[in-house]
Length: 275
Image (cartoon, rainbow, N blue to C red; front, side):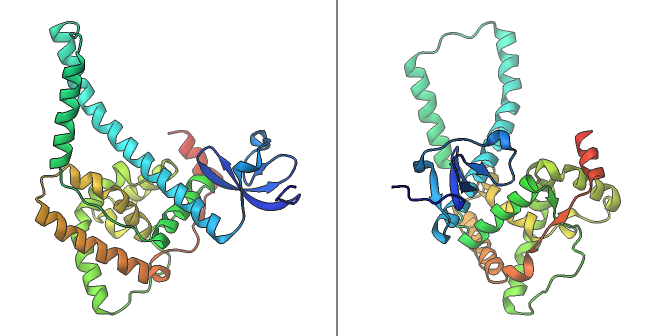
């Protein structure tokens, strides 16, 4: 007996992620072209309920983190490739590598990784959901965070707020350096260029961009810290401050984050396509 009714709202697996769909004779993914319609077994479909919606957001969050880490690894490896290629051209064809040598290199790499600063941050579920919504607004719905905010955001006058601003000051340099290289989605590149042209060097980007982009920085902090020479004590202090900031952002989520992003114009899309 079928567990889903015709036209029932469901969540359906497409690859590793869950998407909103209808249970019909074949599945249609909301917002997708009909060329993606497909027949699927019931094992790929989930009921539309709070538990599965939360699971869907967790899957998307994991995919975002994995994608960012893969991109960072590719950037680092591309920097090393040039050196390796140069050595190969200078020294002739590389010699064959024995299994023992390979195991030795792997053991050495594991030892190096163990010595790297290790910053582990637990991002609260609500902020994970915010990251997923942020990703969907931009990559799926072609919307943008309005910059700078059209209205000043509420700033709670509490002792927590003072700590929040103190930590933010310490993150500004990191944020300004990383924003253009690793915190933007492709769809935001044109907006970033326009903002840079408008404000120039007179305004650091941390004064123009808001909490939505700052939260993305937390996803990359573990890899950024691993590339430094911070000692364990300094990492512990940083973790404590960043965890406090995450708690603050969680508590004041409604005041810090926008509920809706701007719809872009056809002109913006044309500019983006010509880059």
